[in-house]
Image: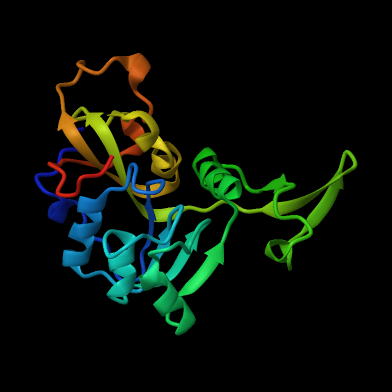
Length: 225
């Protein structure tokens, strides 16, 4: 029942080439930068990354992409002013993009964790994003059928955890963490502090430990939220 790992290197040691990995974060808030750094050191390649964006600057997901370790990214916001790594790899054909509207991305991940086979959404109907997908009129409105997104691993960041894997987040750094934790076969949580079982207020626990496989207490190397 004790899910504490001694290091992030230990936590990501079994990630194989070709794995699909969800990575939490919105902008820089809630991004598990140190866990991504550990994955870079570990060496896994040909990865499919599922995240809100494709990284910024030369850290985190951008570093993974820049090193040629990502073959596909599923995200809602791939390009911005400093998304040089994504731009170069995508334009050269080395990186495949599946663009998903942000609300659909969150719901597709949530659906995987909830065991929902598929769902209809109006978002994307009548656009290029709906090409080749089943559509239906319901109650006078047009919808697109979308399928769940699951992953082999999830790397997420929380504020506090106990040894059972129960997680408490810090404000908006929560973002995609809770839904990603439910949708991955192995969720690895990077946290600022591990407390004793019973020290977390049950009403404050957002992600129950049943969804978390590994917990690592980390002193952040990156000054991020």
